Length: 247
Image 1 (cartoon, rainbow, N blue to C red):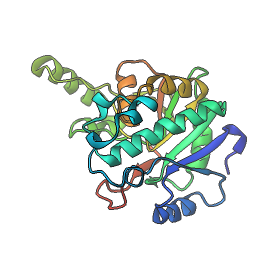
Image 2 (cartoon, helix red, strand yellow):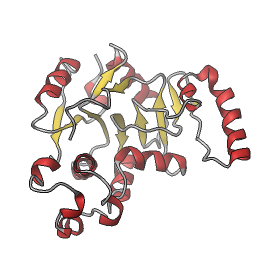
Image 3 (cartoon, rainbow, N blue to C red):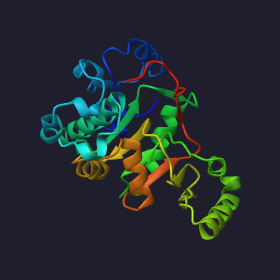
Image 4 (tube, rainbow, N blue to C red):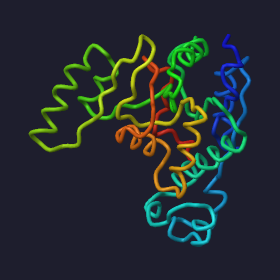
C-alpha cells in the first residue's frame, strides 16, 4: 500500500445526493483514507430556475464567477465547475503541499493504482504543478497518442494538418521517463495530483471563473503555462458520459 505521507490528502469531489456513486468510490478506495468534498448542488441551490440567465447576478459578482463567460452553461456545468473552484480555495487555505483529487465518476484501469501513484510522485521533478492520473485524448487521429508507439506518426500528421488545413495543432504528449509523459492536449480533470504551486496557479486562474476545470488545465497545458505531467499509461477513466446520475 502507498505510503500515506507521500501526499497530504485524497479528496473525492461529489454531491451528498450521489449515494450510488459513493458506494462505488468506497469500494474502489477500500482501505485507503480519503475525504469527500461536497460541492455545490446547482439543481438544488437553484431549484426554482431552469437556466443560468435566471440566476440573480449578485451570485456571480459575489462568488468570482464571470457571468458573460458562463451564461451558456447549464446548471449541471455550473455546479461542477464552481465546485472545483470551491475545492481549490479549500486546498489553498489548508496549505496543502501535495493533494490527490478525484471526481466521483472515476473507473480504475489498474488494481495497483495506489502503488503507481506513489511511484509517479517519487520521480516527478521538483517544480511540477499538475500530475494527470486520467485524461482524454479527443479526435480520431489524436486518440492514437494513448500509445507511445504511434506518437511519432501522430506528431507528423498533426503538423501537416496544421500547415495545410490551418487547423488547431494538438500538443502531443512526450515521454519524460518510463512512468511519466509531459502532458499533451487533453480533457478530463477526473483524476489528478496537485502540488502547492499547482494549487496556487489554479486558484489564481479560477478567479474569476471562466472555464471548466478540465478546459482550464488543457488551456494552460497548450499555452505551456503550467508544469504538467501525465502518468503513462493512464490509471483512471470516467464512467460513460451518458450516465444518468449527473449534476
